Structure formats: structure tokens, C-alpha cells
Length: 188
Image 1 (cartoon, rainbow, N blue to C red):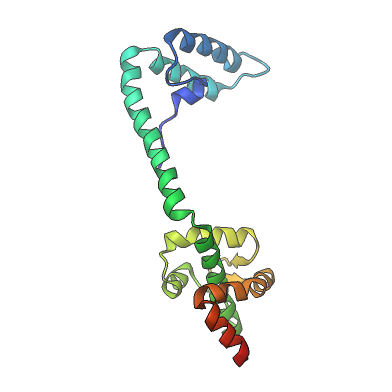
Image 2 (image 1 turned 90 degrees about the horizontal axis):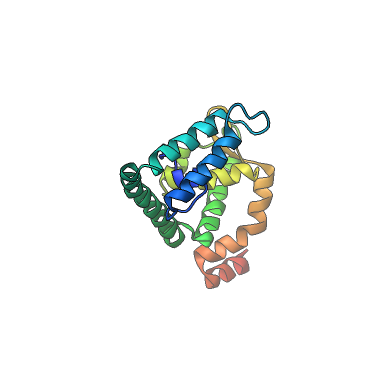
């Protein structure tokens, strides 16, 4: 989704800036980014500065822009706030990473000739929508705990196996509860 430019940010001013301030800042930035300026000229930035000034210096256009700008800022903060409440559960994310590694580990051990699973397979096995797995997969790929083949199949790496083994007991305790883990250890 392509969001409109933030003209206040482009001019580096507050949404409460007075018309005189807008004009003064525009003149400074226009000089800096003008294509004829050999040291700091930047044609695309110059165009953005001009567009921002054209809208913010006209009272009618600025009023219309402010309505859109306010909605965008509210939406941005709503997403941050809801993300902090719902999606930034770090323990749940860590548990999901370990679960995904367990699934890929088991697949590699059980079917060494075809050790990879697609994101769709993982969605079905783990019970999480692919959209919710994307961050987890991104993280594990960046940490080199899993790899993505040319056909988009995901496979655990040796580093992923070591990470899983180092954190397996913690993940098992979280899933089973402390009493069941003790019984499992005694039975082993």
C-alpha cells in the first residue's frame, strides 16, 4: 500500500507551523535541493519540497491535507498500539519459532530425501495462518536456522538443529507444564 507523502515531514516542520515558518523553511530547503546546487542538489527531493510547499502554503489545500494527515497519523498509532497489545507477545513468538523448528527437524529426520516443507504445509501443521508465520520465517531465515530452497520449501539447517536442541526443554516445559516434563525425564 503506497501512502501519500508526509508534507510536514518533508519540510521538517510541525503540523502546527505558522505560514511564515513554512515559507522560511521552504526557501532554505529549496536552495539546498535545487538541481543547480552542485554540492547538495537533488531533483526528486526538490520536487517533493515544492509539492509540500504548494499544498501547505495554500490555506484551503492545507486544510484538506490536514484531514488526511490526521487520519493517517491516527491509523499509524492505532496499529502501533494494537500491535503492542496483540502481536508483540515475545514469549508466544519464541514458542512459535521453536515449534516451527521442531516440525522442520522432525521432517528432516523422518524424510531425509525430502526434508523441506512449504509455508502452506507449515500453516496446516502448526495451525497458524501463513500471514502470521511470515515474521517467524523471516527471522529464522535471517538467523540461518532455516533455509528457503529455489522452490520455496523451508528446511532446517545445522545451526537450527543446535538452537532447537539448546532450547527444546524450555519449549517442552512451556507446552506440557512442569509436572509432565519431570515425569517424561524420569521415564527416559
